[in-house]
Image 1 (cartoon, rainbow, N blue to C red):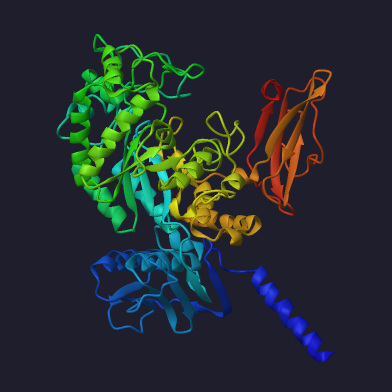
Image 2: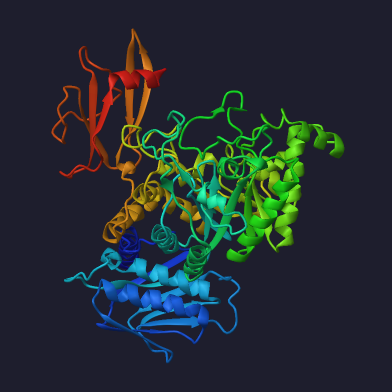
Length: 631
């Protein structure tokens, strides 16, 4: 009986240690074994690494990170027996692959072992996450015990492609802002930046063969507000925009490579090309040439019900000058971006002006093309051939799958739940899964009263459900997944950060960690810990997980019922209809609410159970708006 009691006590202690884990690593490692004790950093920190050019930047980044917030001195060495020992395997550990690592922390210090420098870098990111959140501070933080738990971690990614797409066409971001975004990606083991460089709203990369792409195509009339609802601009000065010189591009690419991030440039075509046509109208199918076309400033120019263009934003597939243009652009881009893939777009190409073009009709007759989708397929195959001629592989949005593109073109599956990606993988295409249902982080993540209006919502818990290898897919052809950040409603880098984090955490875990190890409750715990890290790093993030989901339905007799659903556990919701600001002494939400007679606003706020400080933001919901939602 005594032995049984002792065994039960041991199990209880082990469970308590596990349930109160000090490990808050994102993405969740494959294997974590926590041991008793902590290792405290000495005031003189040494980082040991073999002589390897690809490791130099990792050592420099790690040394800087370990010295700024601590105020400690850090030195590098090649002798071993250091505070932090970085070790490359002489014989590869097949379990780890190219990006995996083993990390151990004990009384002797820290050891990170990997097959390749990328694995060492990823292990270093985990090491930093084991330290207190203050390690992210840009200045010295005193009175902190710079300790980390004794632990053994084995970790490696499930997917090769772990990406974020950043649209810099709709709104332009500086070189330093792009580098800051890359820094945040690297912390969470995201390894691919899909750089959406061109669209109707601006051309963002210097092409020496076509200087008007940046002198004309990179600039538009400045407008702020609800993008897509502006009136067409007149002759106002075109002062908003910018572009990256080729030297700046090389600098950004090098910066990303030092953090083991590949950059995939996108030139979206044949649609989404108004910035091109504004600069070079002869590349359109419009006749006479559209001399008055401007880079789009946010006005509407598409009838989405009929998919009809009011203004031609599409390159002409029957014009040989277009292919010469694409050849020159791809040639210059291939010299700037070393990664194997180049994105050629292919989405939302509307055929309004192709249908009016005699040249396109002649092309269809000559090439025996029966439909305009086949015309786009003809265009896509010619572009793919150009891309391949410069040693690159092409990627297209999943619409190109319907146009008969070659199997050598990879498919980025964005529509719906990923069905197009499943189909493409079974047809033999390589696939990057980015279904809008789970990965479109331009969608609102909280209630629409808290952020710029977008036509859809995507809460954090939905992103966390993302599985880049869904049932029915040929897993061998799924390269990975990414989240896409379109920037129509994103006017500055702080809002870029807000829209990315913490949904970027969920994406990172979905493409790095084993699906069977994902646990929403544990992920929320770690996310909250990382909010502290973002605070010290001065990175903006969304607190929407503390705001309830607002659901509205008709309740009869002209009434509506308002349901408030918390996204995470442990929240109390308080409300008032009397126009005062509620706190935790106001009525607690327990069931759907109806507006009392005379009330026009519902104020809502959340608190963590047992705490006196608000957790969520004050939501002010009007009867007028909620009634519209019920319809």
